[in-house]
Image (cartoon, rainbow, N blue to C red):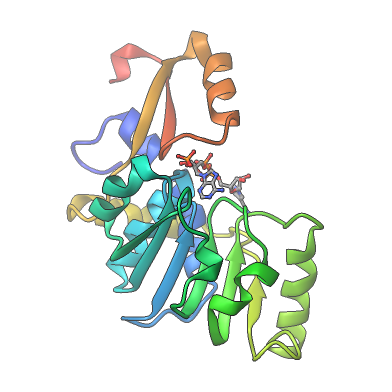
Length: 213
Ligand SMILES: NC(=O)c1ccc[n+]([C@@H]2O[C@H](COP(=O)([O-])OP(=O)(O)OC[C@H]3O[C@@H](n4cnc5c(N)ncnc54)[C@H](OP(=O)(O)O)[C@@H]3O)[C@@H](O)[C@H]2O)c1
């Protein structure tokens, strides 16, 4: 655990970061590359913004009006409010599009990807097509006929590697756990009901034992 962190903070900073790090590791990220993150206010999204800031990406984050300040404070260079604009119609072109809430498709995001750009979603897609596209991309090195663009699927393998990176960044003051709200263990059903709405900001934590705080 990072020094000075309690269990609640430590627990809330690792799951999203683990998936975020595995999304980022699927691409050959170079400093200054343009990356668009959809769902930047969620558990995986808030971690992806912070890790991409650490790796020096030029970040465009997509979120709701109420979370614009938060995602900017985490490291986004530009924010698109999805209640006002459709990010898939953006005039900007991106090296990578990461959909951290799985609400988009490769087909819709293709126009905003640069040639050779990579699309990654945390979900399978409405017809589970992301698995098929990622297999095609692995076999041919791209999706044929789509300007060298690729789809990758973020199967998360190495949790120890993620924990070590996040611990280091927290201790250097470069990563923070974003906690929307906390519930005591006795109210865990309410916590699940809240999370299932798909509208939490960052993470929801469960306090197992007050003495551990
Ligand atoms: N592939 C894997 O290994 C893997 C692993 C873990 C999770 N997942 C999947 O990844 C997804 C994300 O998980 P999570 O826990 O990070 O999500 P989450 O925290 O529940 O995401 C909620 C956030 O998404 C935002 N959001 C909702 N609809 C949106 C939209 N249409 N456009 C942009 N933002 C939107 C919400 O903001 P507002 O409500 O304020 O708009 C909220 O802040 C889930 O679907 C989960 O099943 C995949």
